[in-house]
Image (cartoon, rainbow, N blue to C red; front, side):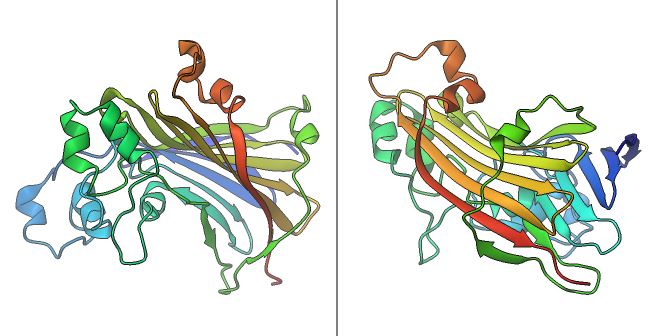
Length: 285
């Protein structure tokens, strides 16, 4: 299998398209969201959240439980992988991820487990006093991607499985036909760490592999990584999905600065606390 990347710019959004038949991969990348309404005179005359309003107002209307967005929110960035003929597939985008920021059963936003410790460690920080009680200031998400139905309306089925992704196969030195890395959002937690969600894809001759990673580091408190891995062998009729979470306390630890700032290096030191495998079976058309 071989192919070329078609790149176009549509209204400020760069779109890279790669065909790995029968699949089509489209990566969208653009600028960050404005920090306030960019067209108040126009938005004031339109229905709240309509497509005629600016992106900030659209996000504000669709995310009413978030009093603040991440410092760097990429509203138009997304990765789409779909069957070119039948239309089913999976998508990753910022809006759907932010919709899953954790809340409790009564609709109130949960404080993450380290919030009190973080607040105590940063008692002189106005940031912690201002927002800790309002929402998950780390923008923690359980987002695993958005499944797309086929053009006939049939959905991909979801089931647990004991089958695992062949990690040794992923380490092979086969030619990478297509690769992209897309940031969905990032926040520096008022200079006290980082919370970041991004998605990467690589397409090889016989398969594609996707990694959606939520990386959290609260300085001197906690490091957490939640990974969603998606693997598809072109000879099968399903996707393999692995969801895992790794954590480690950063209290009283002596970790080099270059490791703390590198999600890949830091992840190798974290303890696995959760893992589950799923099979996403394609609909019969």
